[in-house]
Image (cartoon, rainbow, N blue to C red; front, side, top):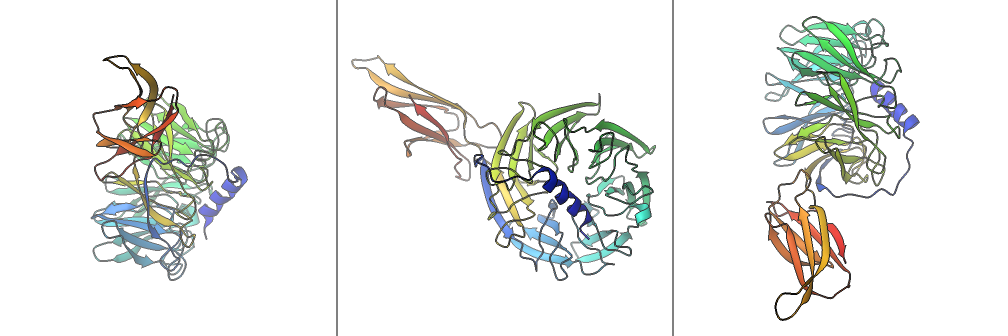
Length: 469
């Protein structure tokens, strides 16, 4: 039973009935389709990838031998994909949607259905021996339909369930893997939030998280939970104008949390926000607008002070985007637009490894069952300016076109630049040189210039363009 995913899709269809749009297809990096799901080997992966021993592990919510989902491994060094476990029956669990959590050499995860009462399970998987075990079965009274990853704290795993509990609004729970002890530590009641879909994030001994629904406006909340005292507090209520229905959890950076909502904001297409727990200050940082992405679902991923994420809809083909947001400058960039053939509708967070982001899409690819992809942010030079000038030095004068630019905004390690005139390369410059004079030009004749960035692997970015004069 794909309970959680079905609720999400209904919400998206109600609030985001989006057609194709004419938004630009930006090129802010190098995208590679690494693997296409085909059904028998799993399909529709909505979970972020987890790295262990240089190999990624993940889940697909359907496909496999019983079409109930799989656990898979993917080795980026050899592009080797392997199904390591097929979910096969009720007791075994079915429909995993959350990413895996590594603890003590074992991977722990959940399925949102299956188990004794079809309410989901917690499982462990040992990559060294390919040993799979069901370690807990959920029941409606103690939580059901888990959709969030587990968070490790002091030897205990903490998580949330979308439903179940005393008021059927979901719970926060702890699980002790050494003794297989499961404990409900909080029951959601609607007014204090309900139906959490995201994992909890730890900061200074306190957990913070979001709920999809509940609160004063039934559009979700941000909450804190102190495991030492079992104190639960609503610290922010979403009201629609400031965001609504958060499916993503919180990402911590320098004491401040960052997150995204799937709806709400000025266009009801979602927002990026910050929340400072030291003074309970909530700030909308960016409103999604559809041409540059809409309906973000997955968590934000931090790299060098910049936040990276994906959207479920929007972009040039209305199939989602990869984006970056720099909190220090409030700069948002649509880095890559999914077009369907290369994947579409991503719902998972990006996983960073060696300067490369890895992720999955729910749909698209050769069988329209999703893909595994990699993405390297690689931006063109910023702030390209140019003007035509007259050189009066010497016996003769000349007209020249003077170009100046700055390093890319973020995400790019530049080793050089290429300069093009009307499509023809005329110069290759070192990274320290961010200006170029094109001599002996004719006064008033328009010329198109493009400046691209080069990285150490020899890759070339898209161009920053300008016409002079």
